[in-house]
Image 1 (cartoon, one colour):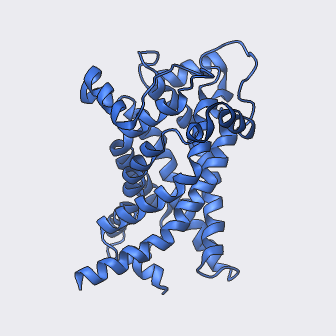
Image 2 (tube, one colour; image 1 turned 180 degrees about the horizontal axis):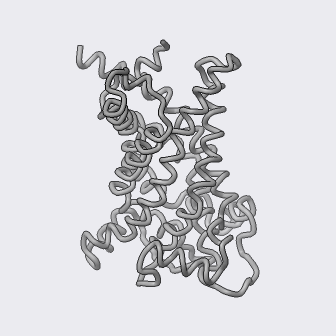
Length: 314
């Protein structure tokens, strides 16, 4: 058994939360610009039955255009929100996944070491549960991040809300709508993150396990990278429709949508079924490297936190 496997099995729930959050923050530093592009492409042509000229034609053209108009700070809008969100979301999603999986395995396989059981339905349930917990905790920051990233003084796409900082956004929403306003759209976040989490870690672990059985891959960076790429594409396909819905529900200032299902129906009715895959190219360009970086970084942060905990507890 490798040192990394030992670390993942012995690390505490809090340690897993911290390791997962740090890994995701490292990843989002590089992927935030394409997340901004994805957000604007998903809002482009919102509820429009006529197909006009697209301002953002593809992810690369959109990134160049935004950089040209808004500079480096423009393509990194919402980065602080993204950090806080990633700590909450992936801290839960990655830190609670193994404990949840072990609990389920202990219930259904009481006579087997729960860490050694690989049951796909249980893995999916654990992934979805941990993802939903993270979505709820991180929802206020994702709400503000979406509005910050959709805002542009040069090109207006979707409803525009101008926040100068994450803190100003929190104060503004709370003063107008209270705590309920901070969790506007959390039901859409649960659907989106539950779907993505149900796919990500089970697919990553399954792919990693199957690759190791071929003897072509040993424990190491090549294995983690390959499994992460497969997981990234799987997450993009499963999550994109719910991601479009989430972006639109979060970005609205009034009551354009009463909820995610209403948004789902109105989007298809106005723009057709393929509107649910708006921004899919940017989604893949974001989710694949984000998944790769997060899970690869986590292979480093898990032993780091394990070593720290070992010294403190010793």
